[in-house]
Amino acid sequence: GAGVSQSPSNKVTEKGKDVELRCDPISGHTALYWYRQSLGQGLEFLIYFQGNSAPDKSGLPSDRFSAERTGGSVSTLTIQRTQQEDSAVYLCASSLAPPPQETQYFGPGTRLLVL
Amino acid sequence: ELKVEQNPLFLSMQEGKNYTIYCNYSTTSDRLYWYRQDPGKSLESLFVLLSNGAVKQEGRLMASLDTKARLSTLHITAAVHDLSATYFCAVDRDNYGQNFVFGPGTRLSVLP
Image 1 (cartoon, helix red, strand yellow):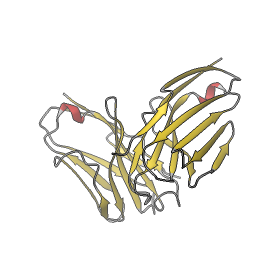
Image 2 (cartoon, chains in turn cyan, yellow):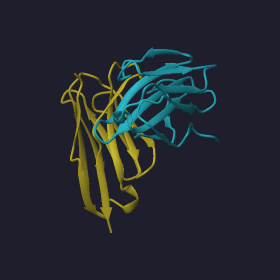
Image 3 (cartoon, rainbow over the protein chains, first blue to last red):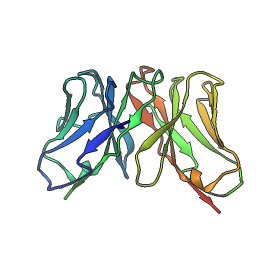
């Protein structure tokens, strides 16, 4: 079956521009996570959604970062006024329910480069 | 602040050998996760360890958890080239399955 998909797969943008990253979770998965992976900071949790609500957004690094989820399905991560330190791979994961009850499945990631 | 450490960060080993990767963490959480990442790929969930003394095994990999020592191990038996990847451990910060803190990863290279 279809896994978690993310788009775009690669994004190059200029410093100061806004970007939107999209995540399509596996159908029926209520839990959705965004992570960031960079050389300097490793893997970092950004935000967790249960359905359309985000009970834990404690990992968002600044108010330039926001995320929403509509219809309990697609999620969009928006970065405003991008900075070079935002360059990273942004990973999305989904699960039927939060672990450990259910397994997380990860998308292929969006590689963001801010020039 | 919750910290998760892994040792070693880089591991090069020959096929057929055994080795252990260590994951130390600084909180009292009793939920520990292991993931695998192939080069240029995304993450794959490997194991979930939920209590002190928990042991999970799949193929040549076996993971264990000692919550008192705040230590998890990932043991590799008779390594094969296909196991070459980066292995991450992660701790569930609040035990709610919502917020995970990852270790830096151990890059494993299995040489023929």
